[in-house]
Amino acid sequence: MSTLVSFADFPRMKLLPEYSLKQVINLMQKARQAGEDIIDFGMGNPDGATPAHIVAKLHEEIENPRNHRYSVSKGIASLREAICAWYARRYSVTLAPDSEAVVSIGAKEGLAHLMLAVLDQGQSVLVPSPSYPIHLFAPIIAGGRIVPVKLLPGEDFLANLEAALRSEKKAGNAPPRFLMLSFPHNPTAEIVDLDFFRKVITLARDYRLLVIHDLAYADLGFDGYQPPSILQVPGAKEIAVEVFSLSKSYNMAGWRVGFVVGNPALVRALEHIKGYLDYGLFQPLQIAAATALNGPDDCVHEIAQVYYNRREVLCDSFAAAGWNIPRPKATMFAWAPIPESHRHMNALTFAKFLLERAKVTVSPGSGFGEYGEGFVRFALIENEARIQEAAERVRAALRE
Ligand SMILES: Cc1ncc(COP(=O)(O)O)c(C=O)c1O
Image (cartoon, rainbow, N blue to C red; front, side, top):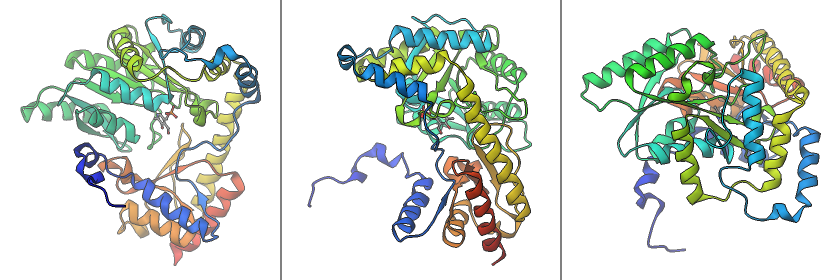
């Protein structure tokens, strides 16, 4: 069909490159259509079912016609209360449901619209590289600029952060206004302790930064590690918000439930812009999400255990196949340096090589930012037998 306009005519589209993971996934889909059996570690899309008591609550509430109307974009009161009770129970953090909590349509939507609400044109945001793509692109969609901060295994991230701030100053750029963080980290699985967040808050005060922390992997800590909340730092609420998602902890990725809590001005800005954009999640989803957060938490521990078991099998079987993958202390990912023998390939070429020769899909690290080059990410969304099978296939491909 002829058209007077093309996709490339829209300037903002040029700022949003196609995800490199999407390129690999397109190739995977073609291979599957051709009848290939592909083992998929690509997207962080949980493969497990949502716990039965949460699904049952959705069923019950969906029958009630009162729940079929527009809801409230900031989230219904009982869900915001459940969110605040969750923080009090887990982190001893006190939050006001009316002014310090807003429900979002998944963490991704919350992050993107928060940036749109609060970032001025041209203002800059410090973001780790590599990072989960929306952390890098929410500021860009909002008309801002990214200042990447190297996040590499074994490097002192806070030192890199200060170095980035100094070099911005030296370049004569306006000081960054926001710092976007997320620990446990996707894609690198880096973890931090509460002392790290204390230092972040002190540094943010010194540099007049507002902090956005994404705690999507709050429940996926292993070997006794429990991810802290940045809001546990006394006074953090004065300059920080935290984002959470029910996608991973409760296998609710398709439900699209997240929230943003903490600093009341930032929360209010998100609530305000959302008031223009949406009418809130379908109410039965919100009610079922409150059920999830109110517990019991056994299902969350079971989900974490599945990822732990898969991590063990992945690291052991790939090590036996000649590829040493560091054992992640948290998240549903493993961040793997390209094996020595294949370092002449970049991450995208190597991911395509694995797909073609081993029939295994991984995410190229470069898709998460410039400092992700040289790595690929495994999402632990295949069962243990399939992980072992993948290790065998990869062993053969690496030896070719
Ligand atoms: C750090 C991080 N934040 C947020 C999300 C997505 O959350 P949601 O499904 O609530 O949009 C992901 C998904 O992979 C993630 O890794």
